[in-house]
Length: 270
Image (cartoon, rainbow, N blue to C red):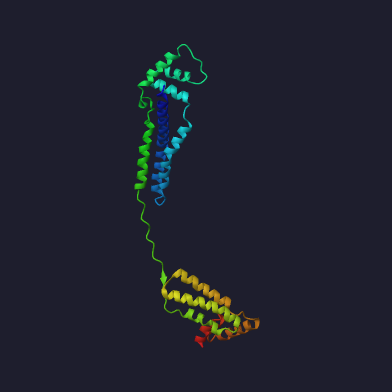
């Protein structure tokens, strides 16, 4: 009976390995097919999660097999049948349990069990690992390999950004000089910030700037100029409107510059 624990350990290990193989064989083909479909329908999607899941399957299967391991009595009965002991090993094992009363034929039972166990090797009682379902393992491996073999399409050519380079920007230069035309210290202080921003934009344009970014920056400068100007009083606005009406028929450009409060354009027109 000293060999029985060794045989039982061999059976337990075989059951654990078979559980790991069985779960992998069942789930791996599904993962492989999913990886193939992902590679075909979504070429840019990552495929390593399927490989990682397939790598975890044996450990999950071994854990489930360990949790579902049959009791010792069933394992002893399995060894008994594999060795053809006609319940001698089971009877001898039960006699070794604590609390069992001795009978007249205990020695004969132990002797019969010992005879069966003496020449027994672990491989003679080990459950078979390979089964028909195990073919799912190579099938899943081939599908996963095929999914990784599908090449991802080359990235589309991205056109280079549309850059604008201007050495001279008269409009920004005029904005830089606006603080000199301010009518009050408060307006001069407000226009100084806008002038600094206009200068930075002009220097950036001389180095080169994307067209969209340049348009956005120019719009910010324009809004800054409008916000920094000294607000007109009612009398000043009526006087400017009257001057615009007077110039509308003879000096169209001057009237437009006056209506927009564009001091630079008005000076050039004069």
